[in-house]
Image 1 (cartoon, rainbow, N blue to C red):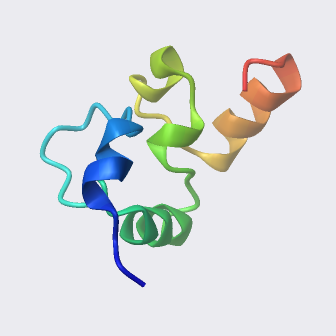
Image 2 (cartoon, helix red, strand yellow):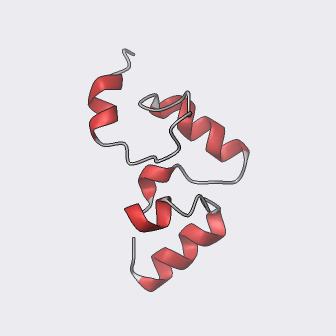
Amino acid sequence: MECKKEQNLANCNCSYEPCPRKGLCCECVQYHLRTREVPGCFFPDDAERSYDRSFEHFAKLVAKGAV
């Protein structure tokens, strides 16, 4: 499968600038799952900037209807 990095970057709201996985969704998802996290693009912008990408934080936002 060909990576569509440029298209992915258009929808990537990750604010962690030195991230080597920006636009490489398959690598990003694998990385975050290994650390019990959800990628930043799953979060609203304000929650993404908190850098708390834990499953627990994501679940709280879902329960509140913020996601």
